[in-house]
Image (cartoon, rainbow, N blue to C red; front, side, top):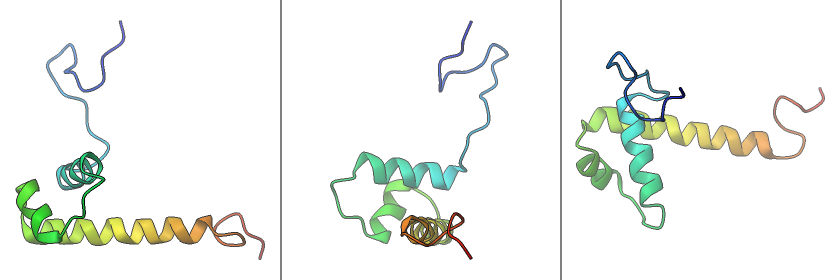
Amino acid sequence: MLPIMGSQTVHGMTPPSLFGKTRQALLALLYSRADEEHLQESLIQLAGLGRGTVQRELEFLARARDNHAFNDRPGCGAGSPG
């Protein structure tokens, strides 16, 4: 028997998530409303989370995006020579 993603296990325990609560909430908001522009204040209100945690998570996501964009350029990243 295979478990259905997002369902509880046989023992009533939910499996651990890949991301923390703040990151899950922000990514869910950003992907479910991808066609909208988001201001930090509106994300804080919609997520119902603290300002500091949302700011830290947005900074982390921005750095991750920038690093990913840098590594996708030709001659950059782990696969580049030298």
